[in-house]
Image 1 (cartoon, rainbow, N blue to C red):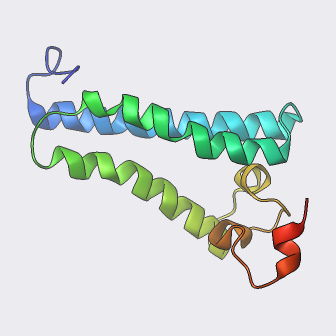
Image 2: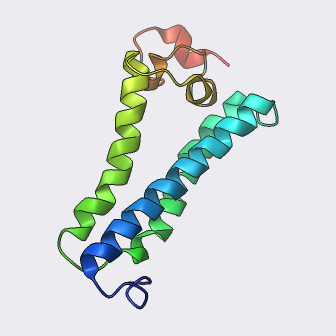
Length: 127
């Protein structure tokens, strides 16, 4: 919608909107990773900021897409790709130490897959 004046072709508009949305989402995640790596943001706080702060930039980018039926699927690629990246890192198939430091509590990449849900009750009550 916002790009329709600049790009009257809906296919081009949606391609640019997808690229912008990917860029904004990745910049946000990398910015938080960078803050944690510098020691300017506590690891415990970074998880909360990532959870709370990832949605709003994505929602702001929705108006960049056209009204074409396929545009919603292109917009859905962004969270799917980010989830896929987290899954690959959590499985150990991809290495991203900055994301592991920013997202996990213990520094173990497998924690990205399971989060706080565990049968080990010590994890539920750990600080």
